[in-house]
Image 1 (tube, rainbow, N blue to C red):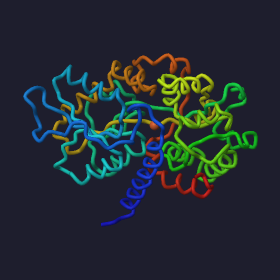
Image 2: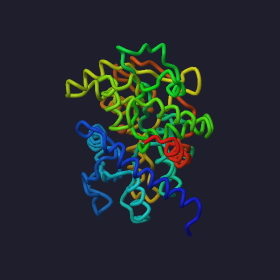
Image 3: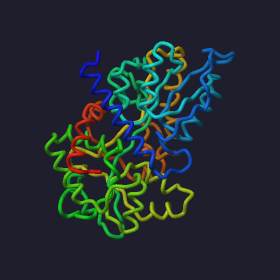
Image 4: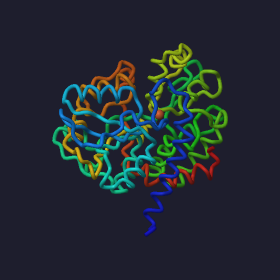
Length: 370
Ligand code: FE
């Protein structure tokens, strides 16, 4: 039966797929520090569900960071539980989980974006995580209401500015970037990218459709150039004099600063980070997380791994290596993130990013945000 809901989900998944293919995939990336760019099976999930030692746990992941594998290795060392990883793009992995149904070898589904995590829940491929340890380590606003998915890290979408041309006291809100004051000064990547779609979806939720559309229209009118490249390329553009301000995820600022490429380090030195909307709705954040697969056959091991990944030690490691914000407040932040101080973030249900994705895409197309 092809009902309204499944047609919505199909649309969302298709849009997400396009966003990921044309967005994150086009990012000029260093080593493995990216999401959604490769499809690769690091270790083929074994036929047998247990090994002689502590058994195993199978992960389908759309997060491809070196630190994730390091943590899986540490977990195996500590518990004897083998971790098998299948990497892929989120929409493909969701389709695979649906197709495999009860016979899936997967125990955990790991991805980025609250909308995608929620769409996995709506598709019925997840189940609640029951663990006092996880509940204690991860605040309730960074988990699904029924614990179908658990947050692993967050990131903020901030305004970065050219330090030699912009006084941060002239910055205030996302809305302000759409005012005449910034005509020809704004750099942002394509609206086909999920980061921008979720940002716009959050505005639809907070401001309403009309205001969100006006904002997007104003932003497009202020662009310094046609959208091109990934988040890091926007920082590079403003440093080279194309635009004064850009929208960018926080962790890319850290990745530029820690880059092996001296030019990227210079870019990081020349940009400032500004957390917008501190007096109003708060800065936009998004989340990466792990869902417990409904037909998991190694449920205890999967929950153990979730407890391990959300423990303060692992959380500190994720933040130090990737410059993402930890979900566990006990974790230690890298110096750069510490230097930004605490900030107020939007109070939006991550599920809305998925629900309002078609509306966000519609608005972006309508206002000509390429
Ligand atoms: Fe990214």
